[in-house]
Structures are given as C-alpha cells and as structure tokens.
Image (cartoon, rainbow, N blue to C red; front, top):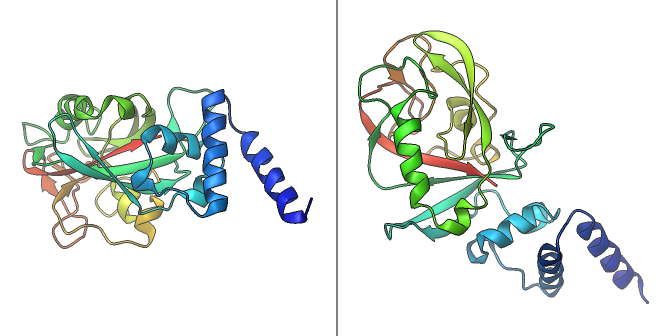
Length: 249
C-alpha cells in the first residue's frame, strides 16, 4: 500500500474521530471521497444538514469558504441568500455547558424595511426592542423547517440603551449584528458587543441602510445602522430600515 493511500486513510480516521452517529459518519465519508475525486459540492449545493455535518466533522475549512452563499426559500416564497460570514465565530452557544462556540455564522437580508421600536427610543436596547421581540420571531417562522431545526441559540451581548454603557446578555436564534461585528469599530456603540466577523475584515459593507442592534450610548433615541455609503451612522429608532439577519450553526 503506497504512502498516498495510507495518508488518505489516516486523514479519514482523523475526521471520523470528531463525528458521532451513523448518518453523520456516512456523510463525512461521502464528502471525503468526493473531495479526493475533485467532486466535492459547494456551499450552494449542500443541504443545511450536510453543511452542519461538515462544520462538526473537522472538514469545514477544507470545504466551506467565508463569503460563499446559499440560496433558500422562505415560507412566503421569497428567495434569499445566506452568506457565510464566519467559521469558528465568537458566538457562544446558549444550549451547551461548559461554554462552547458555534461553528459558523450566516447573514441574509429579508425583503422590506422595519423599525427598531414603535416609539423613538433606544431605552432597553436590543433586549427590549420591538425588532427583537416582535420581528425576530416572525422572521424565524418564515425559515424552512430543516433550517429551523439546526439553528443554535447563542448568547449576544449588547448595551442596555438609554445612554447606559451596561452590557446586557440575551439568548437569540436570529439576531442583528452589532457595530463592532461588521465594522470592527465602536464609534456609535459601546465596547463589549462582540468581535468583528471574518467576512467583514476584508469586505465592505453593502450600500444599503441596514439596522444594527447597537444602541447609541450618547442618546436615548437612536440605534446605529450602516448607511447607503457603507459607513456606520445613527438613526432614530422609529425609522424603518433594512435588516440583515444572522444565525449560527
């Protein structure tokens, strides 16, 4: 048996060491065989189940690329594209102890514009906002059931709003990114709201007014969206803007 075959067998054994369950093991074997043949599917062609298996098999960095997109359909019939914005992100799972991080974070836009709060206030921050408590559950129900079943609840940290710099932790399945998570800055927000996602380290923000979950710590009535020139700004909480929803696997 030549060295290439021996090395391939060892590599497969290493990948299987991190996989549990017969179905997951078979998917890992199939993916590795496809990789060796040069036939490995891209993110856009994988099912959500296959994506999650790859993420937890140790194959993620060989198979998936930050910035790749997967199109899927909401229950309304609207087609959206989820962009992979981080592998091994800073997002901590809320369903597992001791503290364990998620394997990937995705982001996608939905059609329409929405307000952070009905009233022009940022008091209560992301935790108490209409965006989080009314719109996020509605958006979640629009996701296909196979994706819903795989999304992990994660712990998100955001300031409390109302000119407070107190950092409040929430548990979220869908969430908006913070300023630092997409811009790497805290010009319009408080420190402690996460870390920049890998995709945005080398990519510009879309030129679209889009809400962030970060309250402005110097006012009681604004949150920090990014604007139509790709820079983080401030906007009144009852204005309507686009939303870029994030979730973790």
